[in-house]
Length: 243
Image 1 (tube, rainbow, N blue to C red):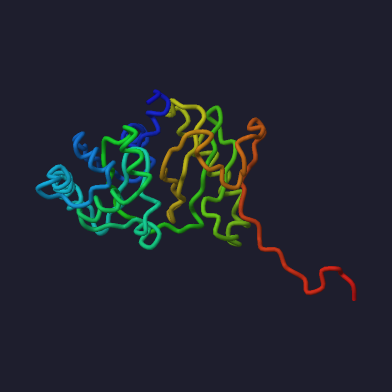
Image 2: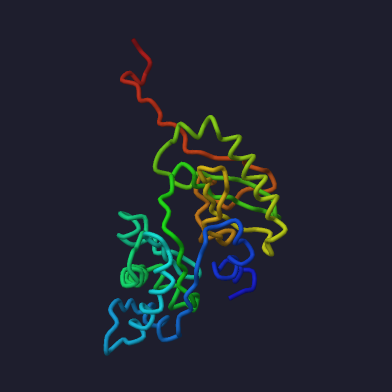
């Protein structure tokens, strides 16, 4: 993996940015466990003792996390699983943590491609979707900011959007010196107590989704500000305007 891409792995960027993200623990996997994860092996037994060993290695770090836990691997989370869709990824037991990682095509692909060495654990937090944003950082500066969840227009964001943009700009300026990569995409969360927490780092350009910026083919030297889902258009019963 290229050096600049290596920084995008959670175990690499976490020590650098730990003061600005969720408390996270890491469990290193043996190569045999990574192979089992790539194959989607769910249950550890006589035929797959490496799975049972990996599950057992999660018990102690998960036992000190209060309540549910959110699990991921170095480069991705199991966001393509049913558990994530219906439970936002919350898991309680080590068996469940492993199961939903193994059921994720994203995680299996990352493991098969040699991009997985660790399982990452952090306390589960039910996040307000209106507070999640994607930041596009170009040359160490905030070039654009997009609403992350594109499910609908959130009216409450309209009146606060300039304040959110200013806070995001200040945050990027504060941590820019810590970033060895000058062009990257950062997912963030605004907490209720006015902090900004980093959720994830992503590669600049494809395959990262530009969300409301629509395309990577644009002039990024021109700041795009904050982009929100527009309000729904009213449909007239008389579209011609004739009376």
